[in-house]
Length: 361
Ligand code: ADP
Ligand code: MN
Ligand code: MN
Ligand code: MN
Image (cartoon, rainbow, N blue to C red; front, side, top):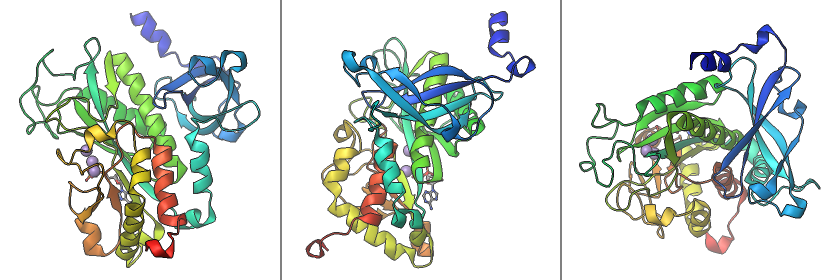
């Protein structure tokens, strides 16, 4: 074993300038992060200087056998915490050979919205709270739970410590450091209400980079859980019953919300979100209706409501924002398996670009 880890930790810079680039993309079911590696002649920090690449889309449910080639375009570079040195992780999006974004490429549309002049002007910040659940590999039941049974009721686990309350902390902490190493703007982690469930936050990050960073943070977590022999789940309601589901609360602000009198801008933005509640819910994650029951710190799926410091609301404004009369708000509706490209760009589109008909105001 020690020779194997010696080789994995080999410092290539002793013998070559070449580096390894791990190209990452999103597969056909929308939550499957895929990756493959290639050698590049030397270090690189500008994604536009990296070669495009391709993969077999018939193996990811994204193309027919007869015409299976999908082209991936490098969009963002992070340091590789697994290989270290000058090696990199490369977040890509996917196109047909003719250069059209394929249907699962949600980044392309998001980048268009974030390139809109009015949106650039407002410098939209996102802070995404990614919740997830760790499962025992063979039985797909949360770690720390008795197989086929349940732990004691929720209460002691949220931000808890101790062998009977916190399950999987090494994975969480390894992921935290790996993300910081990679250059992801990870802002914290915490243990969740349901035992075996955890959260990390990414942000505040501007525009489409928020989506890139959440996806690469998910990728890094998949890799770490792979090493640990634990299964990562983004199911919005992994255990039926009186157990908290998993969300991806999306905190959001624009330049005018962060400026004096911004609470008024926030109120108007929330009004627009309310008018488009149905459209947003349809795009906020598969199976979210199992989670948004109106119980376990959630709002009801069909009804929009908002409030200051209200964790049972669709949208929550913090006490600090109310007091300062400026700041940000939290969209609590997105589920843990949401696509951050879709959610962030939709919030920006609805609140900055969209102008409701005067009859709707
Ligand atoms: P909660 O109290 O809901 O658990 P967290 O502390 O888990 O909130 O997450 C809040 C997230 O919002 C963090 O990632 C934080 O960096 C981010 N955030 C802070 N200020 C802003 C802002 N002005 N605009 C957008 N996001 C912000
Ligand atoms: Mn949180
Ligand atoms: Mn949480
Ligand atoms: Mn939250």
